[in-house]
Image (cartoon, rainbow over all chains, first blue to last red; front, side):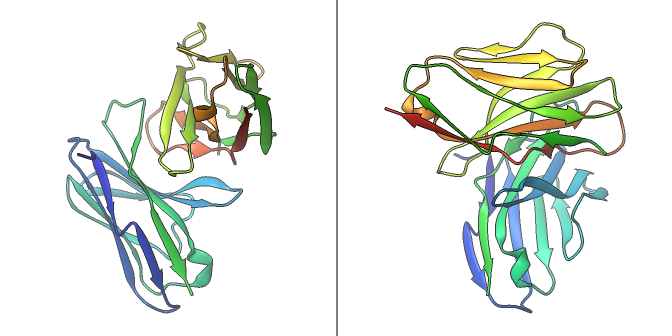
Length: 112
Length: 116
């Protein structure tokens, strides 16, 4: 069984639609992260959460919001999707004393 | 803010040969972690190797080793006895060890091609 799961794995949506990407983990980690990957740009941090009550913006948070519903769940929302949000989105988790992040399988999002 | 630079967009190596991928970073911090992640076509991010900045000894994991030069802010990855399964994108990443902001800062990646 996967330790970090993301749903959906692939999604096509239209400009202006609201969309939510979900992440769940069974690793018992406190920290969770959302990254975006664009071709030729590597991964960039969107939001991160130290625990349920502590959520922080990353490098590219504009146009996104998040919700930490429980220690194991961290959702990313696009309130009004636009085409330049087409990308591969990764969720990751880590312990508080970590020196490694564990990544989910990614969600490929296409905004038409 | 920290930056990570991978100056080789693509590298090619013959199977069984050795290849070195370059990474440089810019930081004013003295305590941090450095990582190499592999992303095969399946797009899964897989940790290859990590290095703590306070350790002078270079990390090694089987066929993978790093050359960590703290003063030069350089962190290269050497893959020995290259195998077809090593073909992937490789990302160098930085993480601060101090309190405050969290998350990894990634380079843009190097696409490694293994020639049979």
